[in-house]
Length: 288
Ligand code: BEZ
Ligand code: FE
Image (tube, rainbow, N blue to C red; front, side, top):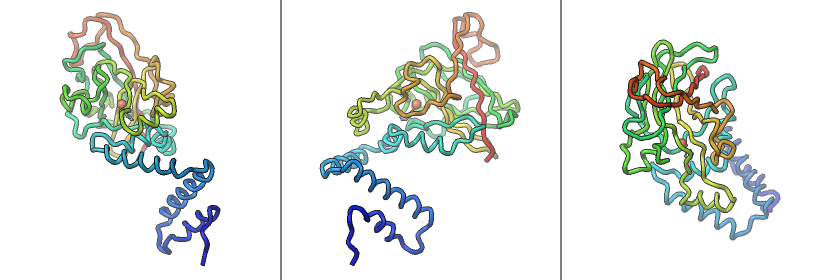
């Protein structure tokens, strides 16, 4: 008989793997058990703390729906989502960043130069750039899926007053790889904090704010899809994003433009007599 002790339990665990266990499963699950066991020993985890942890997971499961996945949010605020992103980012390509839970499938098409703002009030922001490969060559036919909050800080799926596709669009670029659209300046907002993850943030003395951003999923045949975001360099939460999504190359200046300078050739041409802002953000994809 083999006695299980607090010191050999990890070894016993790995000894239970079947002979045919997939080597990657053995590696990942073995390391998970090792770290969990080390964690419990390191903090001398009590029964009460262990039970609280399990109740936390049960609560997260109870409130998780297709629109709100509390486990993804947990991964986000622990920095795990961002760490996985960074482990697999390609240095020559644009950095990836968190997807978040508010992307909507099958967004409506928007032509290059189209308008995402529709009837919403707010400062007009012209977003443009080139989708290119790591050598700087434009990628014709690339697609860019864009989404953001409305000026009230809510995504369409959080706000019964918004059409589900408001501030969501899919653009296909032409031969020059150039994308462009108008929108309103996104605002900083808080991640959902009325559930168990909010409890963790509160216990840790953390706020739930994210710096304002635009989300993108960029895809093209023969290239790795890129999930990313762009942040303005003057946002007060830039250095304290609660989901750790900010990377140097994703921070851009939203340049103020004078009244009367809005360019031709866009859906809003002739309709923006006052000042507006402009951000130029090229997106670099790595080969598949
Ligand atoms: C977001 O940016 O939409 C987001 C990301 C992570 C958690 C919650 C929201
Ligand atoms: Fe977001």
